[in-house]
Amino acid sequence: MSSSLPNVSRRRFIKSMAALGAVVAAPAAIPAKALGLDGQVAPSERINLGTVGVHSRGWVDLGIFLERKDIQYVANCDIRKDQRERNQNLARQMYGDIKFPVYNDMNDLFLRDDVDAVLIATGDRWHTLASITASRYGKDVYCEKPLSLTIAESIALAVAVERSGIVYQAGTQRRNIGNFQLAAELVRKGKLGKLLEVHANTLWPATNHNWLPAQPLPAPSEIDWDKWLGPCPWRPYNFQYVDGNWRNFYDFHGGGILEWGSHTVDLCQWAAQKDDTAPVKYEPQFLPDGSKGGEVYAWYADGVKLVMRSTGWHGMGSCSSQYVGEEGWVETGDSGRMAVSSDALRKELKYFPSSGANWSPKNHIDEFCECVKSRRTPSANAKVAAQSHIVCHCAYIAWQLGRTLNYDPVKNEFINDEEANRMRSRAMREGYTL
Image (tube, rainbow, N blue to C red; front, side, top):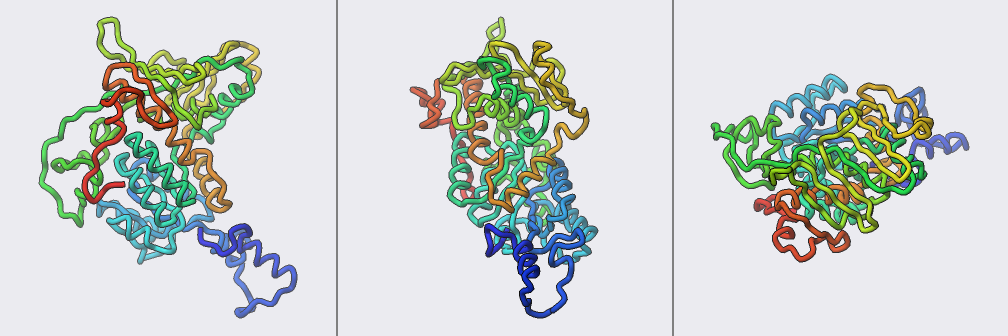
């Protein structure tokens, strides 16, 4: 957020001056809310929030942002008129703001000086481009996952965030949820012995290349189809895409490994202390009849094995992860429950409520907001999130090609495989390139 005092908040500065008896220019009586007294948040301590593409999941995020007293919702961008109007109505209910600005072009929102941070909750195809564009305008970013559709997008995002110096948080909120934190802590403290394997709960990898039937194109003022497509190849309009049914279409989606792996592979990277690297070998698994299964195995340079699979879990809930060491294993998921291999490990466990708190992004959003103020680096920053996404992309490429691939995580390229290397990026439409 804007401040001429990057290391000392203006609220604390004003309070200190008042305590020293400093003379403040008129008006002589400063309202309590301007000083942050009586439970109010001073304007200088507020984070002015803009939103881009807020729909189903985005409404969950926005609701949590707006629960905070230090958040002021100031502008919205959406390609759908009905969603722009919905955001205007929300702002009017909250603030009585009949002039709440809405846009169908994110650049117009990013140009606003009064926007400190943005919530990006578009479909996956827009996450990288919108985040990089926001970074060029100096806006801090909370972006829903997956943050990218390709290896090239992952790298470009990490570079852009580092160059701009913005605060970036990927919406991989399980890094800030207690049971997942405890499971990773057991690994890092050596409670499992030497780490041998990490297992990530993923979905069936495939996407399809079909098109939905063409429907009459609405006016751009109602739904801007060109902007909805953004960097993706052109195809005929169908409202089902716009209404959230774009998943599992290749042009818009990175497949089932990325869909959940952006959470669970990320957890495995974190627990194994591999946030700065990726496996060097990826091996898709096959069924007894020779057809492709849904699993991909990978190995890090030190021999630790990463298993990406959808079956064989212990019922701990969605987005499960399991860590296996020489002396035991631990598994947890969105239920909040934890399964372990021994009574000795069971003594290390704590109780976590079986509720929405076990998938809620509240703690994650709170961390982002505090980092916006302090300029600290969040736990799901662009570097670590991009690295775990690269792992998912590598695994999906190996699965699509149906063969083992070797990867150089320093050069970010496959070794001696031209076809796989071409799949590290996708063509982007003119006017919507990085």
